[in-house]
Length: 431
Image 1 (cartoon, rainbow, N blue to C red):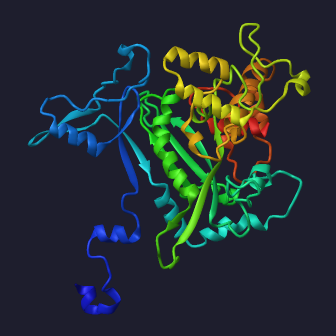
Image 2 (image 1 turned 45 degrees about the vertical axis):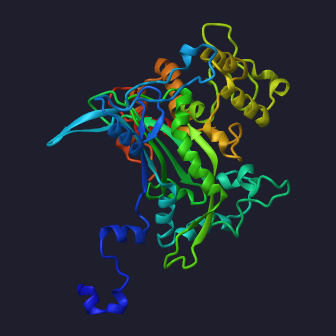
Image 3 (image 1 turned 45 degrees about the horizontal axis):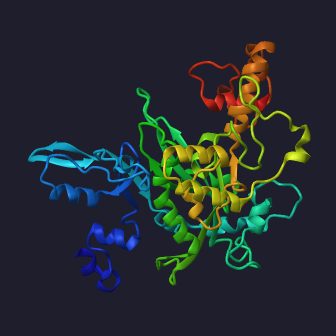
């Protein structure tokens, strides 16, 4: 009322409540929250299961209705999960029911709207177009996928998705799946699926304000194998909308709105997460890029015998992979699934619903896990620890001139309890 009395014409459309303010700013309903079955990870809309609890006169909560094998030959194996999803919470005036586990699903569209409203964001998206052409591969823009990714899949001679004209409206993102321990005093593992916009320069690409959160996976344990598809399904639904094109709401910056498109062009994870996300079998059994299978001779599987690489290397066929993944979905029993995976090395992944998704070419093992925590960890533990005095190595490292952004306290070579992974990584990188 004060603002209207001061200048009615200027403030006549000013929001009168927090609800209308959020609606005007486009920050309402930024996240969906699903109830999760603690046993099979099936997702349910919270409003639906709580409403069913209200209509149910019994004291028990809503039970999961998911059937893993609806076409199983044995009738007894076609029963629903029946795990109780809600729990009873005492309040002042009695009891209410709430989900035992929840899956927060942040809105990708809302996050992108917030980023585009920042000053200079579009200029950063266009910065890659000013790079000089070089034969060196120094960033994702120098790779074949970025240079050849098609704008349409139904046209053989489609134009490219990433061009100078569409640099600020066609986004390519790289996603990662990983688990972490949120508590120090207990073994509780939660997961997160997040993405970075590859159009942004590398120096700002991984800053927290530029990270897209796709989903937060509940604990207390990591999701098992194909059950991650329950969580991927609503994420893929929104990714499909963004691939087909999304018009951002009208604002002072975009008086006519702005149409953007988004594609996932890279999946960078550690090996176990990569297998879950893309539907591949264990890396101890076979390679996801070619048909090379591990040698079973000896105590452990291995990939020896690379001297004949020119004879055996053959990249996996994408269409064959999709057929095998569909075949996994058609399996009627768990034993049939196991046999199918053993024969084809493929499981179904919800990411395959993305028409452009290529689980063979788009999947990379990120350098931190592959090099610093994988190969170099093995070198330090198996080779250095027997032949090199790591204490002496640390002393010698202290006299080396370091880059300005590297602190000496962040350099360690010895594998001791309490050291951060960053300290060991820096030490091995320095060596």
